[in-house]
Length: 348
Image (tube, rainbow, N blue to C red; front, side, top):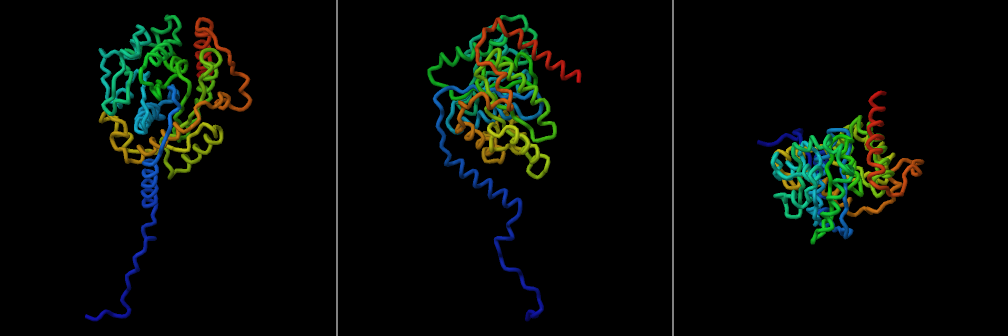
């Protein structure tokens, strides 16, 4: 049958027809994967001790701690994760045993066990180690109150462990509970760097001033070497203006500390812990895994010896003392100042 001259003619094939938001997103993800394959990093030759903290819950502290650790291992680092959260979620995600009778961080803090006696190797990699948490750690806050040098318990254990190693660790990452109690203060006293994950939501910056205030007190009285080195934006949804505005505001206030990489909302990141894995092992090619690997590369390449003044808002540099102090002189003062600050905010 002869086709009518008036019959519609099919549009010619064009690649432009595939220029959709989804296609652009997939193309971008593919390009990022290829870029990561050729990424080369050099480690500093010393052990960097980083505490991951934010007293606001649900911002991705544990998720960031374990996935950053796994991502660092994927680029050749040896990493120890210290699970300082009584919930033990980091231990679960790394696939290590943390039942009630397991030697844990509690034994290190209260009974002065050597750190080497509790460390377990993650099934994911021989280079990924974990000091697990158990339910006993929930009572450590109360038990630490009467201990001598209570704020320095973790620091002493970490320093002794690092000094005894035959093969150097590149990173020690400490996962903190969502509070500013003695467990978190122990982490601050032991660490050199602070990494703050910030959720790209409305309440992201609330409580950040309190956290930075505590950091300044730690710098002044307990640990002058501690500084805010990294801020990581998490749960980013680029489709919403709110997420973009929060990210812009955080970058405005902390231009030197915020990583260029942002962690998107990802189903794979949420699913991974239920299988006792990090997202790097669960689905290493997913958008969440790629983002954490990019963040890890960026973290390694950053100069970790940035001046401590960059961790403070303009005009506050003078409040940080560079003088070291003995535990006996200052440990009670820090706890009192932290408690007083929290009580003041609660009364407002």
